[in-house]
Length: 264
Image (cartoon, rainbow, N blue to C red):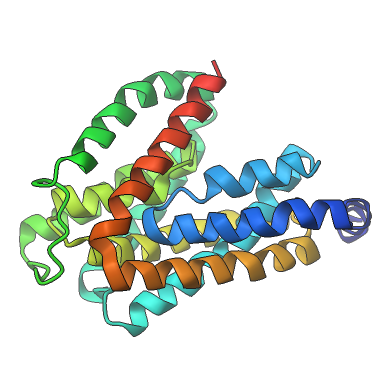
């Protein structure tokens, strides 16, 4: 029954109009996400604009974004920017945080969290604009000490909780936390944040697949364009993080601010 339902939705929404809307936007979402996080702020509205029901749009978006995040993560791993020694404890805490966040949604509304975000977003923007705090020194290596492990683990726990509770901008906040608090350079912060984000995306995808809220074929088509955007974008980060990461993160924070204010 679930497969039949998904098949009906797939036939209803897979048409030229849907694809002409989705494909360019999903490429751009992948490009933005690979550089500064926050691609979901573009891709999810794209699925909704194409006419998909809300839960189906979320589930299908998770499918394509998981593939896209995997591509940029793989490229960062191949270039040696991911520190598995550091990130494994953070993966565990991110899982725990995401699970707790999902449970918290039963007690809090999206509106209540929006009030908090209205305060957090301007602060985040100021941190990114402060060159002394936002580390772009690519020659600086990760310091493996207790403070770094605790900082990355706690950041992953808190932001993982946010991802389970609300979600938009998770990748951006991970990059900010790893750069400003853990003192990673821009590329290392992005690369390690991608591993965390890939983990939370995959966990969410399982839930939506089991719930029958994912259109597999449409999600896979979207994944091709998202993967292409992620591949191109991660190349820009590796080549010139200093010039491109800060403006893209500011752009994502602006999108998130507009989205939250528009919800009031």
